[in-house]
Length: 242
Image (cartoon, rainbow, N blue to C red; front, side):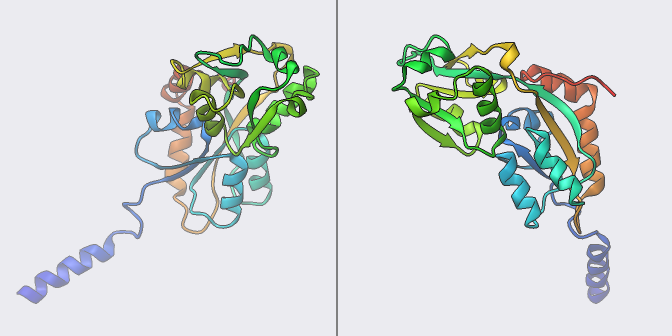
């Protein structure tokens, strides 16, 4: 009888699909670090710069969903057959973030032309770094990267942390990061005409063993009314439905 019970238990265990209890793996841009867990706390999240996450997925990382802060990374994975066709699910704008006590006496981005300030920006290749450089070219302020003490960060969370801790006099971040650090920082708005088109893309990763159904369910949740409401609450813009 005891052998029969053991056999039944082993057979039941074998009937459960491998990885059935594993959490969905969502690889997402650092600027989504607050809204995604608030929308769905079940997945396992990996937040970093979009280009870093793309490289990890290219190298076989066990991602099921990829959410990038600009189209390039998701589109590259799609062209390589590593993810489904990306969909735009959110937008954002850039702001200049300063510490609450503003030790650098910065009143606008143009103050940085005076030089000598500690400035945090994203590295080239990271979406926030690419967007920042485009915005500065449009504002004819590219020279501030030479006249100030510039630290280059791998993701927007690092820029926000430096400014909030007073390790930088200013940093270029997304509006959503400024909202998340409110109380320790202030944001200075930048001209609408200089703003790059910040578009977030979402796709299901194509790989052996991927949780395809779970990934599609997550994408539907982000695109649902509840998902759009959460994104709006955390300061993101929303693309038209389509």
